[in-house]
Length: 90
Image (cartoon, rainbow, N blue to C red; front, side, top):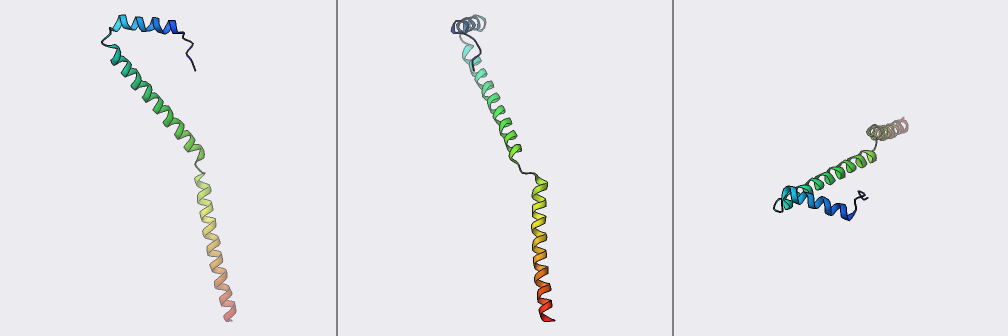
């Protein structure tokens, strides 16, 4: 994904930066730009991971409904076993 800047334009921009800031300030400017780009990259990765995480999260109401259905089935099974034993005793 290029910025549509040719090599000559990059050299010209570097020359202007050299004239404006001086040779001693360029490394600190480059470090600051690198840190800024790293923070932007980390922020975009965090946003992407949050979006993916929210897209893959299961619907919480479905999970609750499933667990309640499971509990109801277990209670129904226990109740059926109890009524069977009562019928046998009679």
